[in-house]
View 1: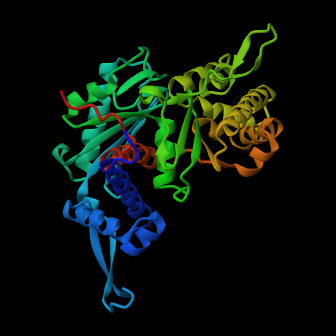
View 2: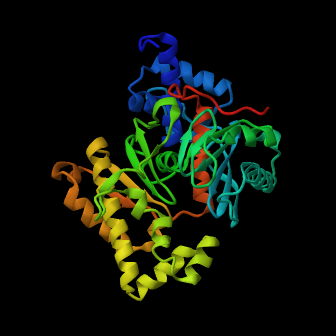
View 3: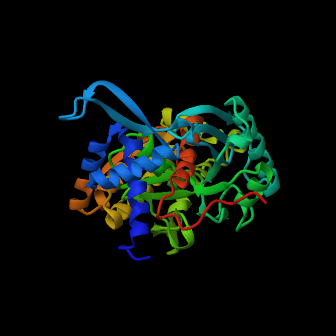
Length: 402
């Protein structure tokens, strides 16, 4: 497309105006023009069409008057009823669902502690369907009132096609999960990586609303990387998400390559404790890290070494991410953060040792506490809402019901 194409520019301006209203609403047309560096004519035309379509709504504010006109200023905000979406987070031992309106307010949420990992695709799709249906009913809605569902999980996901290329959730590769879920729900479904959903959720609902550039490192069973640039999720070719688990962080004593996932994912830590039968049983139930945390509290030398090793590897990977993208903020998220200060301290020390000084000074590292079902589901809902916003950078759409 030509950047000077009037239709393309209209779509881009529409998206930015919607984003400004989402971030700062209720907001006046004058402030939209100032923040978006757009002419008042452009803002009036686009906001008028958005009001007519029911996507935004005017809110008269008493006591605040337009300059030189003496009439109450009309503020604009998103119309909460313009859309309802479902965010679905599928973890190895948990399914989390959040139903939200167009403003991202959670109408209902559900957390199911259930073992999902290595189940068949059909079984996972059935479990996801049941969870979505239950949450929708809890929200007082019907599936016909749901505009979109977004399912997120760790691994490499091909956005838009709804295909999970590889994930610790499935034994198979190239799983058409979006199609499987859409056929069950009769609702459009998008599938996205957990890291990308966390990045967009942090920008939409978290503490980084004013940042257009952001990186998220998701430390789970795999090591996901989410990059936000200019307020948009950066995806690879064909919409592929990023997983940096195979990043080389050193060598083994025999000279073979040591990769990040070998030492710094949840499974790697649990494998180091596999000699303990109680850890094996707990890991099968998704509670293995509790034993590692308990041992850390007792200063168990073996666990301390495992955690230190994992933290150092993450610190090296983090330095590489900062060297490549130089984001103003990097968010660390995921289950490994349950390991607490011994882990994050090792990450910080390793990062400081390996990052170039100018880059380390401009990037803020934020440790995000492990999220509950509500926040995890919100991340997925942010992706679904972005799809409905009509981003000009989305080149593929959701999987449609068969």
